[in-house]
Length: 282
Ligand code: NAP
Image 1 (tube, rainbow, N blue to C red):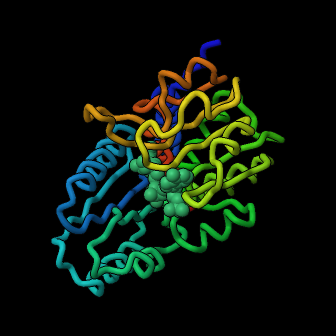
Image 2 (spheres, rainbow, N blue to C red):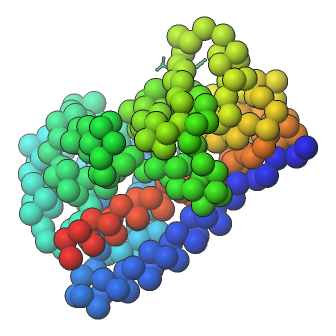
């Protein structure tokens, strides 16, 4: 059996097309969704992410503003800018690109963003709402996974989902959102004993570890659905996931590739959350 390959790029494309339609409807009401992105410092990866977000906004018709600051920006200045954007009616989403330089507190900065504009879903109010199963802005990568599965007609109800990773931006929210979908959820991390015994029990594995080709075919039950969040470089410098795709696809039921799986869904969900925020205001 060869796995079905879940085409995240195509699914993301479909969602972006739908968003364009919603943005046109909003335009009839005189509203253009607006996203403000704050970038502090010169981190190369962050620069690329911000450029990609800006480009994606332009493609679907979201107004985006990028605020670039030097690495020595004071926290007070940053908080002041966030307060200004919180009160700006043209802006429906605010995103501060992480990581921040060490002298800036990520907690205080995220706390300063209005939960109604926290389209990244990192504010404790949104995280709390997610934890109690309420509607909120959900963290884009795990939300993208849920949407992707929905589009593939893969229900999580009653399935055993094993999440590997417990970060606040991927692992934990992926576990909470799977639970919301009525899955039975196991969360694994670096202290988990016999990880392979855990993953072998899973109907669905969500791998968010950050280690190239860390999981092999033998770690999965035949027919399992494998969602690979990892974005790593292999020994040849080629982008790869946490799962050894070539071997795992021989026995998996379905699998996401890297690149072209979870990655394209992440920015798409940022656009999605921004449009939902604008709709709420309209
Ligand atoms: P992270 O904060 O570094 O978390 C990694 C998690 O993996 C931690 O919970 C860690 O456990 C666990 N882990 C590490 N070694 C392990 C082991 N040997 N066995 C079991 N668990 C282990 O990373 P992250 O931000 O969640 O990101 C994870 C991966 O997803 C990275 O490759 C990142 O680049 C990628 N990512 C992709 C997207 C996308 O859009 N596709 C978005 C975000 C992240 P402890 O908690 O015990 O340390």
